[in-house]
Image 1 (cartoon, rainbow, N blue to C red):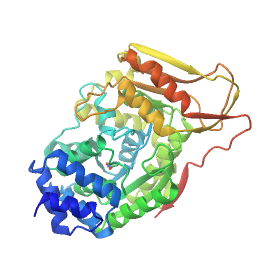
Image 2: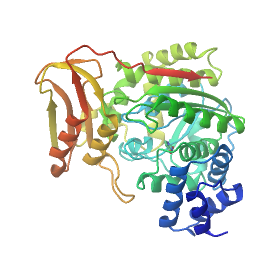
Image 3: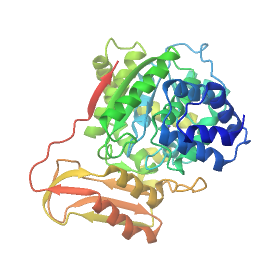
Length: 434
Ligand code: URA
């Protein structure tokens, strides 16, 4: 097989065979296809799409680029959650300890920031010493000990996704249903799970802006999970504004700690509890999602979820002292406030722009080689439907890059639309597909 011929075939809108897709994924993972050729293939797949057979083939090829972990010698049902990506989406950090505290095992393999959206691994690594690169023996031991573990892909877990994800991030090939399906499901199917809850985001900060596309993505993910005999629930949630108020890696850890300590951050906890409730239900510790939500709330109010988070961080070598005294963390060199220029109601947010603004401040990557600044980010105080008075603080930004401050302030202000009339708040949970 010839790489150029396969790129041409996809460019010219033909379908690739399973063998051709395996050839491309295998050889790229082995370093035999250079980034520039694989980027061309990704763009062709992005523009021309892939049918369901191709989507299954790319998922399988990425999955079998590594091993499927066998967790059968660990008691209990293993359930994970994966989000399709958003701005300020820190639910994994909160729900993994909640669900583990409720007695369901959570083996979680996550990704890094992608495009304008943040990644769980980057957030966790902002905790000094936190290791997301455990080997398989340590992975199993951590699940046995705490009931939950959060790591990244290793050489043996979906290595193809690790490489392709980093390349998509910098080649504008993220928002593709087959590529997202392959990426998410190859990681998730490798983990050794019995069940999976999918948080499919829709809105201006999601990869699928329109509900109909989010539904198609949810259907593609669910179809793939079912073809591997996994129990699955898909929940379509709103991403038209940041989830919670904090955006940026350490800032999101701070907000997660507050949430685990019982602060009721309304939108964040509504989404977190429905996801953890669905996980607790799939893990057979509740008879329904609603009962799972109640158990999830109890895990927070009893303090069990926070204690579990501390145990997880300790086991993965993280410095728990900064979690117990959040102010000890180093501060950004520059911080600036954005204030309302007139009184009105926040009508809409271009949430993609907010994600990109955080990235510009240092919270994400523009090239594969970029280093993340864990301190950088935004605290976004205002929610759609809130009334703000002239001069009130809408958002604060934090960065070490002085040269970015003015542009980012403009970018954030330009992404907000205000109305003189009152505005209805968007519905957070748009659809549950069981
Ligand atoms: N999350 C992933 O793991 N992969 C994607 O492609 C998008 C979101």
